[in-house]
Image 1 (cartoon, helix red, strand yellow):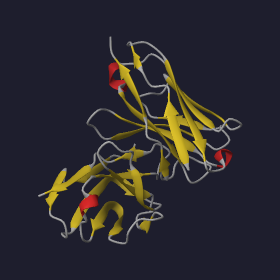
Image 2 (tube, each protein chain N blue to C red):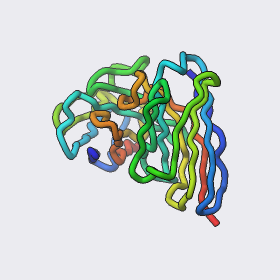
Image 3 (cartoon, each protein chain N blue to C red):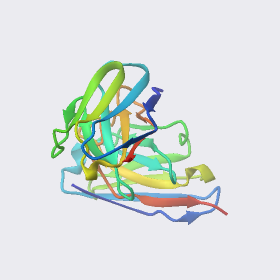
Image 4 (cartoon, rainbow over the protein chains, first blue to last red):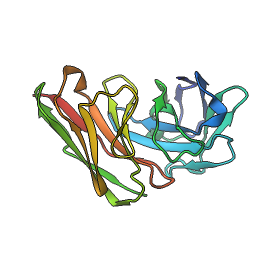
Length: 120
Length: 108
């Protein structure tokens, strides 16, 4: 299993960014996926989850209405579209695989993360 | 949302000693839906244990998990040098996943 995130960068408050996570080594379309973030020096915070088919999504209250998780199973890629970014969204964003087709399970494989910095 | 509170925040121990990390949930976790992760500095978290007490593939048997309801424990029976890291619990009893705040196991 290999997960490679990209798309992180420095962005101004109120800006937008799209993160990607390319997956390999497993049947991507059979498993739910999730995004987890970690602010500098802080703990882990779950951000969003998506079912294997992409038909179901759910978000943490802190990002609901601003972030959208999606996936392209034909390209084995997970996305996180982030809008109206705030300073408190500054974090390392990890994508992680779930060992089921729904997201409310443990996270059995993680990528190395992509850094998002929101600052003027 | 289920809030997970870990204690202690930091555990100062020597190699060979036993480490015990606690994770308390704000409400009962009904389906044994609790996992533990290890995170070393500069690395992504790694799954150690799921369903309270099942070790993930390749995890040494010095790591064990126990508990039920609202109180859960991760035990490292004899610390190896590579075990000094931060440990997180995570619940998946609800559709909103949550993590504990982390426990750092450091060299004494």
